[in-house]
Image 1 (cartoon, helix red, strand yellow):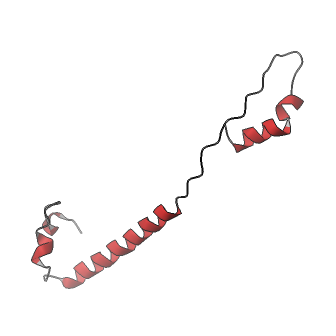
Image 2 (cartoon, helix red, strand yellow; image 1 turned 90 degrees about the vertical axis):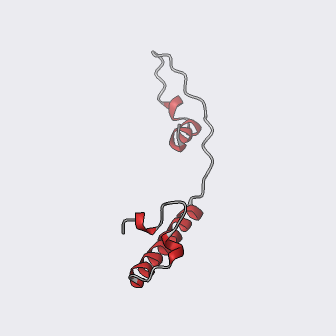
Length: 84
């Protein structure tokens, strides 16, 4: 169900369209899903994108002067495994 279906029930649309020759029971009101605010998630994704772009710019500007600490990332095999 949706907001529109619940509104039709409240305004009596099903009762107004009732055909006496056909037996029909209007559906009951259903609870609506809770409102979820995705703005914080969208803002975090935008900030992560900006940070990644800044990191990529700095990395490309450094040329061959990449610090050894970045080359030996234990989690993903180091910068040598990345494709830029």
